[in-house]
Length: 121
Image 1 (cartoon, rainbow, N blue to C red):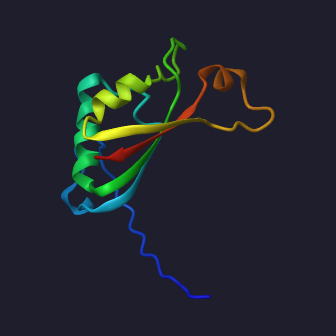
Image 2 (image 1 turned 90 degrees about the vertical axis):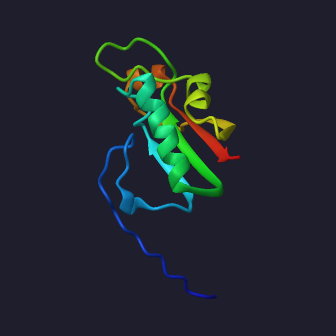
């Protein structure tokens, strides 16, 4: 069995305007509920451009989003069409329901959280 070393570097930034030190060439990107929250359509497209700039060829993006709907102060959600429109250089390949634990709040169940997998073209 061989041992592997993984370097991890955490940076704080705005998904619509990532800092230059983020760099590029990443094979895996993860959005865990940012896209579906309070971003405008223009901000969503900016996130798509920033993800594309950071991603390497054939990169994978996993994006968690609630289905669209009116939920008062809770996130508005996002449709697969809205996601694909914001990431035009990516192909939406899978939509997988998030497995919720027993006892998850009803509002979360009604939001139908989904993982969307996109592959960079």
